[in-house]
Image 1 (cartoon, chains in turn blue, yellow):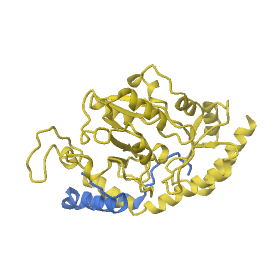
Image 2 (image 1 turned 60 degrees about the vertical axis):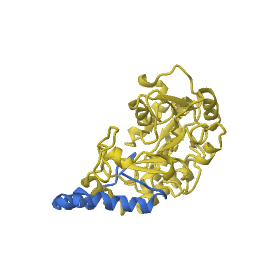
Image 3 (image 1 turned 90 degrees about the horizontal axis):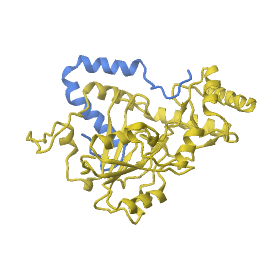
Image 4 (image 1 turned 60 degrees about the horizontal axis):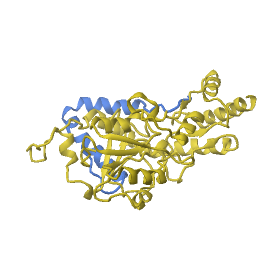
Length: 50
Length: 297
């Protein structure tokens, strides 16, 4: 498939969304916190992310 | 910029060759965007002109260099400009396009990445701010949570609602697990274009092999019409995009000035298909068609 800058999303990504919807508690704060921690590990030092 | 203390009426310098979002953010605050031309090879902010602008305007609240098409601004070079008033002028990097680079370039006061749909990884929307711990007396958390501190008390300043929803975070986490694969694909795609087409296209000069290689961009041979080139490739179902139009050419940002390098890059430049959904065979096929189109011209 030829595309300029299309996102690379597949069923796994949408499944993770469905699981998040199914788990109402974790959507509120746990997932943003997990994402933030992953990003902090990966990105640069001194990372503060709202 | 709010966190950095930029206020209405302040001068903020940015490259004229960037997506409108960079300048829109300045306008939201009522500050004055001041454009700077770009380097002809790297397409990043021109350090010499930046120095001249700093001297001319004297008080500049912030400089917003842009990692255009994932090429990386050299923050140390900006710091080395004598006229950067270290305590007064904040450096806020628009790195929307460069998430995933492995360059230790942390001397900016703030670095802002995007997780919009077309970026290296997406969370559907939103982004990431990295800040230097010592750069601000204002709490980004507080600003993004309606002005509310961790202890539940409220700031005396107006807050905003920029928290990341859980659904976006779920998507971001899923994408994050694949980032190394995406970056490898981007590197391969860029490498194929450069190997196959460097003799006929003038590629943006990339400053490191540790970039994230978001979108491959190049100048067409002199006098070749960009729109005609796009139409020809579209006949083969190959999508392309022009380089960003210099912002001074759009109504909200018209300043009556000329930026010859940015205008030249806009007039002659093109972005090539670089999505990670493209296979290597797709890219080789695109290269073959580009060679044919340019040779037939």
